[in-house]
Length: 340
Length: 210
Image (cartoon, rainbow over all chains, first blue to last red; front, side, top):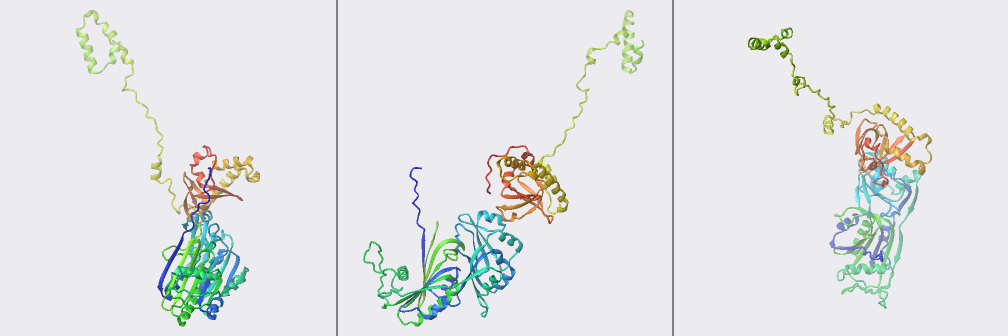
């Protein structure tokens, strides 16, 4: 081989989709399609600070826990299933695992334990699974009606220990979500509690484009520029050729408030915040006023692109941007697979 | 005329009377002498006379006939585990004697390893306690029992709850238990009839993956 081409890799394909005229119900369905989000960015035009009630809905009672070195057999314990899986929504994902090279696991609120296992390990386990790309197999174990407990247990004992990020939402109001942390603590596992980290940005702008009269992807890009505190008006076109979105009827205000919340986010928190944002937008009397909620997925997690594609562990990067307006809502999603 | 007295049948007697009546008188004495003559042809054996002794052909049953008779079919609940345990004992002793397990040095030393693996390959597995530890089909994983039949492509094992299972050799990895030693063998390397396995040569490189 004289000169092998080792640089010509095609760039990952990016897929965008735009949905308009949605109700809060359909927006909730889109958010609930997937269970694991990494961060959320809330943009409120014409505000010095994001309204307190919106911040509180994201920060209050949204602690998540990290359990270290936990075996998977803990999840098939009948006591665990009875106490947590059947009486609430449990969200659980292995932390710091790369789904291209390592085994991963996730527990979703529908009570299914999904495992992403390397082919040679899968052949030693003895549970039925389906083939996935890049020599992995996916095993789904329904915990709500578990059969062959002993067989599943011997199989799960063959896998090593994982670190999990756990969040539990109980059905009954007066049960504290931290009972799951106490449960693992009592079993002598190292449990650490984490709360969401928040960053507030108040950039200086001249006017706010509306989504009625400009391209939605340009508005999304504009919000992203603001969140990164980037230069919106580059003087020299060598470094950046960015231009602000053109809008015929912008909102004339020079204030905008953005908050960036990072952590192990689950759909229930996001849906509550969406409800509050919708009410807030309705209460403002600017014409064509909008507020935006952007969520980003956890990159190495169980992900389903839409209702017609399967829910599999994939290395992806997806962002879902929901614009709330007084009449109806729009959703703009961008997604790409990290490796093709 | 003493020889002529022996002939009693009517045809011969009438021939002799005819000859005595019509032969010239000088030849009457020669009748007896002439009748005593034997023709050479009579001494030769004719083809029809010898009865061939029928060769007893040993009737071997062909494979199709054996299958029709049910030689290879062992119904699922016909063999009891307790009955096969003594067979396992015998096999244990046989294999430890063949492999010289008491004198077994560290595993992997080149000098004895080749010999060791050759002996395992050529050994008989009837009566061995085996378990499937890895298989392309998940339902075979974990099946453990004593081998009661070894064919070209499968093992028939009887498990502790008296169930006979047929496990294809090709896509599985087996672990044999001898006293306190585990021997891990790929099924795809054993896809030969046991009778032929003990005589034929082993392939030089066997890839250790399913």
